[in-house]
Every structure is written in structure tokens, then in C-alpha cells.
Length: 92
Image (cartoon, rainbow, N blue to C red; front, side, top):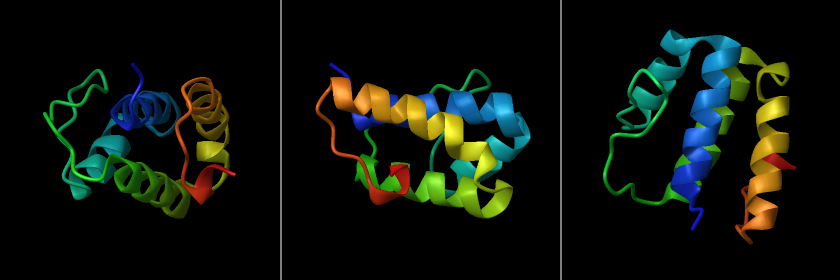
């Protein structure tokens, strides 16, 4: 079963390839997320995963611009649609 946590990891891994590991780790750390070098979340349970997903995307947008999140938005929308997950407005 795909959850928002899976979507968060998808964003993290895609952004690592686009903006680099150090930028991603800085943003995820500011959100209270513990991410390993491969982009997987080490956090057990995350409170309000949907809000974290939205905040993380906003931080990437603010710091790196729209180009950095376009591909990520497309991929996450596909996964969410297939799994009936409602996405925050930043994905549209």
C-alpha cells in the first residue's frame, strides 16, 4: 500500500538527483525528517505526512525554483492518482 511517506521518499530521491544530496538533507532536516544517504526515511511514524509533503515541496520551490520540482510533481501525481491519494495544491 502506497502512503504519503512513500510520496515523500519519491520526492527526496528525485530531488537528490536534481539539486544534490546536501541541499535535500538540509531541507529535510529543517522539517524534522531523518533521511539516509540513499534518500530513505529513517523516521518511524511521521505526523501529518501530507502537510510535510506540501512543506517540503514549497521549500524546494522557494530555494531552487520551479524547474527543480516539475519532474517530481509529475511523478508524484501519477503515483497518487493510481493509489487514490489526495495531493496538496502545490502539485497542480
